[in-house]
Length: 212
Ligand SMILES: [Fe+2]
Image (tube, rainbow, N blue to C red; front, side, top):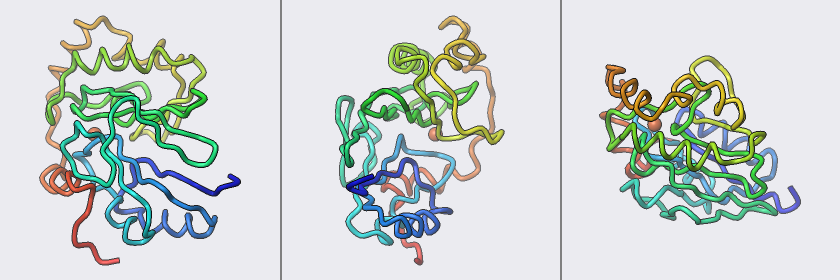
């Protein structure tokens, strides 16, 4: 808090003005707007935040195929104040998904790779159920059990879980790899409503002609 340097993970267009107001009220210096992946279900707030808070830089993985001020890969550290977010490659939902882990391993921001008692779908955007299973088990479930999990979505209003909770209670990820692949490949989900708008916009980190 001494330096007031801050990062914002997975901002969305609808709340970008709210977020910029909060950043200003708290006197924060927003260094980065960080995207866990190229979302298909909503437009990133990154483009608008860059207009509202000049100086903040957009971040996404190099493997996402999107453009941003900073394209990163596993092992990259985003430093802010006394902290850093370490990027872990957790592909499977998309091929460019990153999980960001706080440098003291107390928090992980998993995007759609791991949700609370669920996970992101694997049937488009180069998704692969087998790859996602390996990512979650090798990269996320090996973090400390009390590491807090903050996912990109929760459709029931929950905001946080832990590695231990998901390792033992996630109904999809406690399955064998074969069982998981079978389940994920037979979800038959409808296409996200905004995919035709959101993906092209997010390949540019949400930078589009939006009125402030
Ligand atoms: Fe997603």
